[in-house]
Every structure is written in structure tokens, then in C-alpha cells.
Image 1 (cartoon, rainbow, N blue to C red):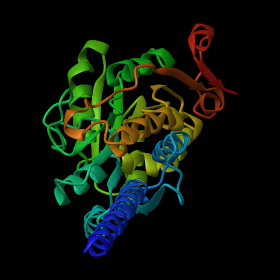
Image 2 (cartoon, one colour):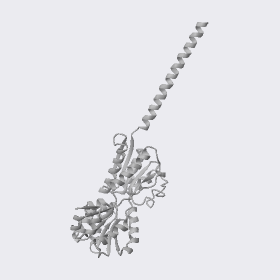
Image 3 (tube, rainbow, N blue to C red):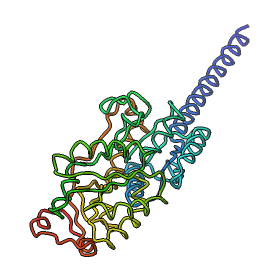
Image 4 (cartoon, one colour):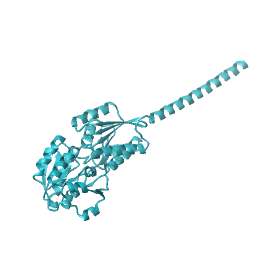
Length: 337
């Protein structure tokens, strides 16, 4: 009887030990699985309306910010870059693809991209950049508290200060021509501001609306005979065809004031502009907080870039028949020789 009791106790003890080992193994496995899930490669869809230097720079800034914070393409994240080639209908198709692929985040570059992505999903986090007025575009409820799955940075440019540059480079100027895409919400916002501030600057506006980049050259030709200068806002369609505007301006000796720094480097005359690489980088840092679960888009204020640079292109001035004052050149933050 004692032997039977002893044997039973030993058997119970062995079973208890095996059970504990099993629990420990299960716990370790669960922990490892949980860790693996957390370290799963994130997929980020990048949606860009069209290729041009500013938007390309913003995209690179975003990618570099991710990498600097431990999210390198091909390792911790997979970046799926798609360009709509200036076609709005392509934006919808690409956005639908991202939703169907169940990407972890969408990075939308420029207003049409942001609108298309926001229309297709209310759940996937969307980080935006180069969007002039996110509220007017309908992708957030307010700048301070988006209240949607969208946040990021705005590229609202100082339209009044930029228009004032017309008088700096051509004091006698009275009429300024503006080419803009009537289908871009960001352009409509800038045109509204321009209409409000032009009278106090002593300027009259001649507006030409277009719908695609192939119409830009014709619009520039139409303006050349009527205006003293041309202003190109941060309109994606017009900027993508900036060479056409510059060709006309140089032939007719009309100065071209532009809405951002990369357009000056490309041949525009002058601007108070943003650094789009830095803007994209800033958006990338915001994206990292979302990826880490430290913040949610609906609670993250839309951010702006505060430091504007006065950039002047001396070569462009010569081609446009403009004589730049020494005073203007001295106060410039960057002069392109």
C-alpha cells in the first residue's frame, strides 16, 4: 500500500513538472509570436499626383525621416510608391489598391492625392504633405485637431509677400497674370488670397484657368501680351509644366515670380519659399509617431514650416531682362548665380 501511494505521488509530481514546463514553453512561444507581430514589416503606400522637384523632394524627405528613425525601406517597412502622372482618375484607382492591399499607412503628396486617399478610407492612417489648405480640401475638420484619419503638413505659402516681390523686381508693374488649375482646391485658395491682397499692393490680376498641363503654354502666350509679370502659385499642374511658362517669359522679357524654392532653381526669378525636403522630413517624423502607436492622426495638429527663404535666380533675371537691385540681393537668403 505504501509503495502504491509513493508511486502515485511521484507520478503526480512528474505530471505537475511537465505541466509547468509546457506552460513556460507556451508563454515563451506566445511572447515570441507577439514580438514577431510587433516587428512585422509595415507597408506604406505613397501616393503622388505628379512628378516635379518640390513633390519629389518632399517624398525623399519623408523616406529619409523614416530611415533615420529606424524604419528603412525593405527592412522594417515596405514602401509602395505610385505616381498618378497628373491624372486625377489614377489617384482613385491607386487609393483603392492601397485599401485592398491593406497597407498600414498612406503618405499622400499634394492636395488631390490627399483628397483621393481620404475618400477611399476612414480607417487607414493618412499622412499628408504639400497640401495648402487641408480644411478647405475637406480632409480634416480643423488644423489644430483634424478629427479624421488624416494629419501631416501644409505648404500654405505667403501669397501676399510673394506678390509683393513683383514690385521689388519691376516697380512699374501694374498687372500680374496668374495661371492655375481650376480643379485644384489648393490653387483656388491661393487665388482667393491673391484677389484679396492685390489691390493693396497696387496690382491688378489677369487670371487664366486651365485643366491640364498641356494647356499651360497656351495660357502663358495669352498672358504675355497683357501683363507686366506672371505669378505661378504652388499649383501642381502648372509647376509640372513650368518650362513652358519660362520659355514664354524669357522671349517676352516678363519676370516670373514663383510659389516655392525649387521653381526658382528650375528657372523662376524669385520667391519667398518653403523647403519641401524639410517639409517631407517633418511629415516623416509625424508618421513615425503613428507607426509606434504614440499618437493618432485625429489628435495630431497639422504642422507648418515657419522659416521662409528669399531665393533669387540671377541667371533667370538676365534671361527675363530684369535688373536686380543690390539691396534685394543683399537681403536674399540664397542667390543662384
